[in-house]
Image (cartoon, rainbow, N blue to C red; front, side, top):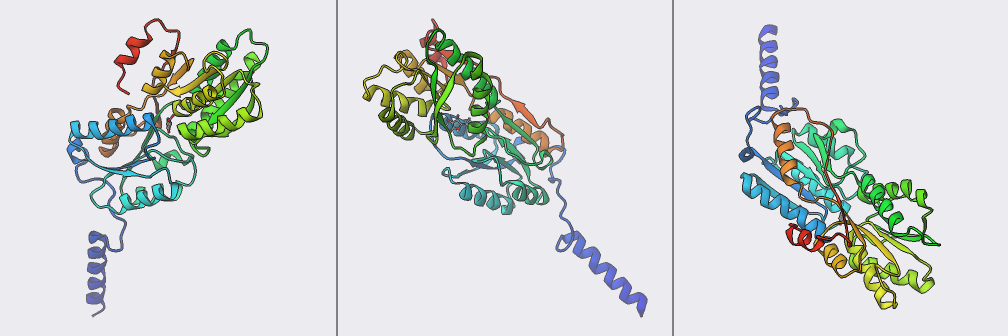
Amino acid sequence: MRARILYVVLAVCLLVGLVGCGGKKSTAPACRPNCTYKDMVVGFLQTGSEGGWRAANSASFRETAEQLGITLKFYDSQNDLARQVAGFHQFIQDPEVNVIILAALETTGWEEVLKEAQEAGKIVVLEDRRIDAPPELYATYIGSDFAEEGRKAADEMCRLLEGSEKKNVWELVGNVGSSAAKDRGQGFRERMGQCGIQITKSQTGNWSITEGKQVTEAWLKETTDVQGIFAQNDEMGLGAIEALKEAGLKPGVDVKIVSVDATAGAFKAMLAGELNVTVECNPLLAPQVYEAALKALNGEQLPKWVPSQEGVFRADMPNLKEIAESRKY
Ligand code: GYE
């Protein structure tokens, strides 16, 4: 009798283990190691639609998914962190999704949801924005070296202000919790001392033209003792340009302006002589990101960061118009 009871108990445990009711679920996708792009169902957590860079980044993911035959589930976090985290949970619970791609609004608060994704057997790839989390919780991060972009911006501002008696610079900051804002600000500060730049005002303009203009307008009401403006993205730089013009100052001449992204709006402002420099930040990341996700889906180990290669564009470049016409965004 005891043997029969033992046998039944063992059989039940084996059944529970197999169907996964109580046991740990198998985390390897069924297609591994021969998954193809057509096996990929991607849950993409985009930050929002805050400007030209973001529009190009979203287009890259939509167009490349179409080309590769990837099923893309696009989630617009509307620049709201709570909404982005909710979307992450939604994709963890979605049985169709096997890859989650995150463009993180902020650097912190991701560890728990990343662990849940790992337990659910979902591949997580970070695009655009880095985060502060243990690297074993995600497959890789594909995005720019924002600190290097900040260093390049400072080098360019030093060049523009060479010989200037004063070097007071105002900084328009992106979303303060984002890696792009933190690292660009850090990189700029690392280099500005080399030529005596002082950051005399710094405030968030939340990546937008409107807020970049409002902040600059308020500063100009206090003083016009400014020689340069460092805008952490083109939209805020364009807002500053509008504010300077309305205050009777010549942007690009009376006040030198350096921004980041190298979007179409920046090229237009440089061609008009109102913006001096834009430091490139590549938004066309989808091909690299999808390739990395497929490798991870097939069980490959990846480097934890693949930095994008980027340049610098100046208003005084002889072939600037041709460059502008050749760009995709
Ligand atoms: O510079 C800005 C966008 O994360 C690099 O986010 C991106 C930044 C970009 O809002 O325009």
